[in-house]
Length: 206
Image 1 (cartoon, rainbow, N blue to C red):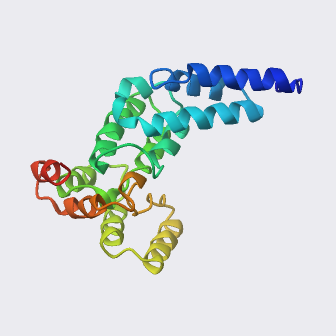
Image 2: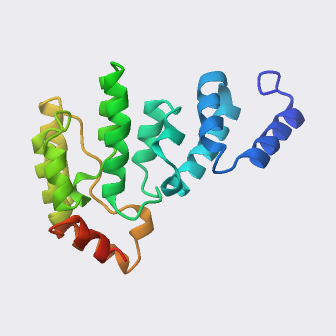
């Protein structure tokens, strides 16, 4: 319909997709749109499906999202509005997903997923775990923690300049995810990065 410029049929296609786009169907629709479609219609469907997945991310298991292209999944992981209670959840998700990609010889794609984590917002126990992952540069963890505590544009620009000069990926931004912005619990999001253990994290976010 899009290729033939048949506007009425194009709009009907969009309406039909909206009717079937739900939390369970969004991953399949997104995956098929990336691989099978093109043009404005595909862009609209991809955006709509990505919005659904981000809004309900905490309802998905890793297996539910395994069909997504890693580059598309990486974009979702970097979103401010992804639905999580703590950045640790993103880390756990990426650990499992990246392990699967690496085992199938797709290390470069796994690297894209690691770049979606806001390392400065991880609890201390998770930072220790992150330091044991070969794909995560140690300086990325250090810079992320510094920026999370003393975030300013000058420091962030300096970090990005150093990453580029050394050929390292630029870490995800240190700012809180959108669900925590303009809310009192944004303080919790920052405070619980100082938690001594995962029990402290659970207590701070409840």
